[in-house]
Length: 394
Ligand code: PMP
Ligand code: GLN
Image (tube, rainbow, N blue to C red):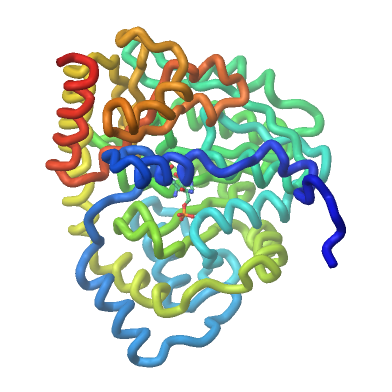
């Protein structure tokens, strides 16, 4: 018999209920709303990727791959980093395959953070960071990103320096950044790198949107800056790059001691990740760069399409340089609380969005912001805009 307890969940996970992404997708499904909340495309990735995986499964690639991942994918990941960014990784020992970036982030934090260690990160922050820091018994030290005059979110270097203390062990850097769309500039990364070197910090970089940058903006991996490769655990995955968010195939890259820390934890979380998908992804990283380029162009047009529509419906829209999200300020429409509006919008307007507020520790900073995903077919974006316009501007 189970012991009778009111709340069996461990105390440090009690603040974490259902994720906002799952909640909004559920409400969208219940109400028939156009779902611009949780970020996932409504079209598939390249045909060769899909058929490459299907063939592998039919051909019998269905048993455990090696713990660190298939050698073909580790080699393809290393070659891709070298070719695009000039950063060399040894496929054996410096590249490790995980069940999506999510598992890499979790294993990285659990393997490198002692109870009481502090982790500096930028808010708004992707939701899994807070949860895995809590699981590790770590302490969050958020640095708030705020819009500059042009509406681009950035940080005050003084805030970053003030967030670092004697217990700081790690900084998490997500660029291109979900949900603001900021792609950190060389100058911003120089500031972060200097802080890492001065305080001997480990950097964990979440680069899952590395290919989704617009207007010619370049993604610069933090590991490419002086003195950073040896202290950076870089993480990326296939979901956004190839529009296959369900594939949950990610990779961790870094010096062998950091990657070993990930491996030691991850072998008891998932042990390994789907082998057939890994082989297909290895091929696509090499052969489908043209598909990725055209996808980037298509997304830039979608950003502009949805932003113009949201503006016409009465929102103030902040311009992202990357990702597939746009933040909209709800105050011009007379609203003040994003959580309230996000909960009512699927019923009142027939559109689902994500309140950015829940991605902040200092929730007041994001109270007025909703995040809309634009990785959808044009007719879906147009339908969402038509509904919002009817609800607010019509
Ligand atoms: N990091 C960020 C910033 C994300 O937006 C996402 C969304 N999926 C992830 C990590 C998780 O990636 P994956 O699906 O590869 O686990
Ligand atoms: N990364 C996606 C987003 O930000 C969602 C991932 C998830 O649902 N966990 O919308």
